[in-house]
Length: 149
Image 1 (cartoon, rainbow, N blue to C red):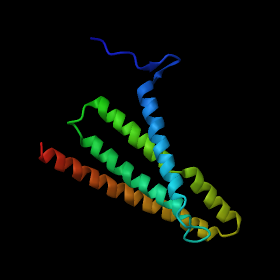
Image 2 (image 1 turned 90 degrees about the vertical axis):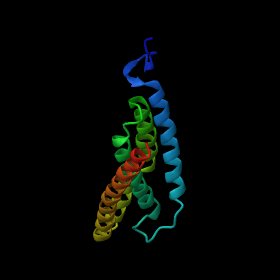
Image 3 (image 1 turned 30 degrees about the vertical axis):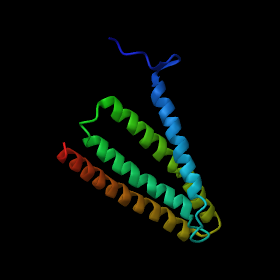
Image 4 (image 1 turned 135 degrees about the vertical axis):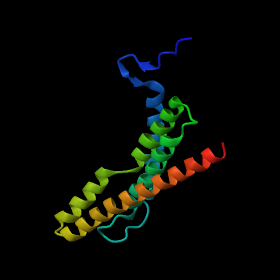
C-alpha cells in the first residue's frame, strides 16, 4: 500500500507532521527558556537565565543526538520525528544565540569588553563541554539499551 502524502501542497520539501511537531517542540523549548529567564542574574553582565537555557540545550542536544545515532532498534521515521521534535523543536526553542548576542554587545557597548568576552567564552566553553558530556551519556544510555535487548 502506498504511503499517504504528508507533504505540504505548496512545498514538496515540507513534511506537515514534522512541521507541526517542530512547532510544538519549539513552543515547549521557548516556554522553558522564558521560565529560566526568571533566574536572578549573577551580575549585571552575566545573565544566569540565558546561560542556563543555552547549557541545558547543549547537554540535551548532545545526549539526544548520540542516543538517536545508535538507536538502530527505532525505525527511521520515528527517529526523525523524535529528533525533529526534541532536537530542532525543544532544544532549538530553548537555546538562544540572539539573546546571548544582545547581552554580549550591550555589555561591550557599556565599555565592559573583558566582562563581555568572559561571558561569551564561558558560554561557548561550557556549551561545548556539556554537549560532549551529553554525547557520552547518550552513547552510554544506548549501549545500556542494547544490552537489555
